[in-house]
Length: 202
Image (cartoon, rainbow, N blue to C red; front, side, top):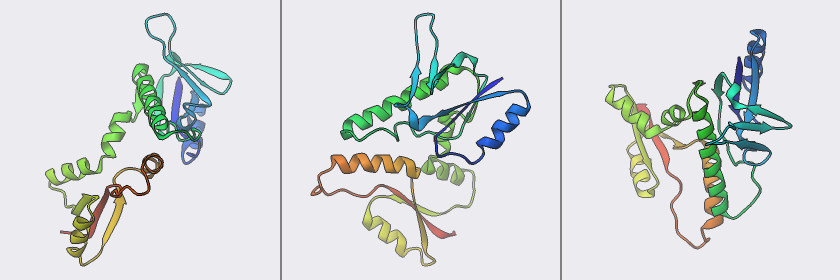
């Protein structure tokens, strides 16, 4: 059995213990750090011929047809790319994400958890809507980039409020870097949407 671990170089939390447990069971584990793709890591997907999918992380190519299962811990495609024009950076990141997604979809093996499932779970507006439809108690919440709406909401929360980004910070950093490079300093623009919630459940 061969397990492909999809993560990024800074991720260390639980991978050593899991790889040790896999080794104790006679399983092989391979790691794909998505922040090295595109760049140090090569990924080739072949169609219409005899060649299959090959992942090259370091000197050893990995025949992806040998993968039995995938453990997904995070995605940061393109985060290690060198400085470049914003439109080229966006295109490179989008192409890397599309290629990684295509590679994972082509494996046809068990994955924990599929990328589309993780993205759905990270969709805060959707999760709030589902929780409300299921009758769960949720705090009064506003998702907005309109300062007037946020101020009005804050006034309605005498107990205080908590603010969070709607997307993970890693995604926000990439987007902000591209926006700063492409938006003139004199151009008026609103800040990135935030999720703002009352500290009490009503």
